[in-house]
Amino acid sequence: MKSSVLTRYRVMAYVTAVMLLVLSTCMVFKYGFDMGEDVTFAVSQTHGVLYIIYLVFAFDLGSKARWPFGKLLWVLLSGTIPFAAFFVERKIAAEVKPLVSGAAPAPAKA
Image 1 (cartoon, helix red, strand yellow):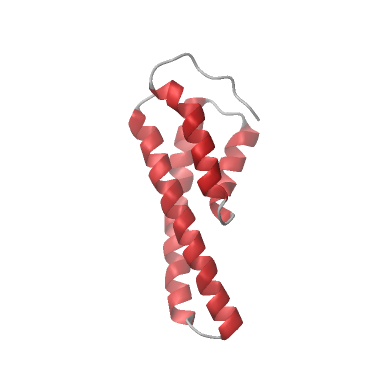
Image 2 (image 1 turned 90 degrees about the horizontal axis):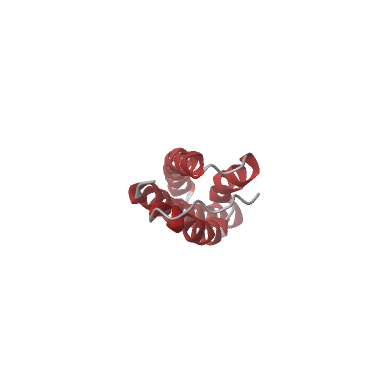
């Protein structure tokens, strides 16, 4: 597997996670303080587009790493849970690095 597959996933995982935190903050201001509706709309649209790109890259990585469906689903959904993508990305990067370097494939965990 090429290292670019892992790099694309890692970049989009961080970008998606940060945008989700920004969106969560905007939602607090919108619904808690009744301000920032236009900013919240723009941030939500941006996060939506970036999340779709994240899904494509995560699916590509998962198919090349031959993950079971449950693991792939968890990685895909981690972009919708604040802070989860940071932890999942770190774990996935550690598991996939041996595959990138050409070592024997790691056993798949569900």
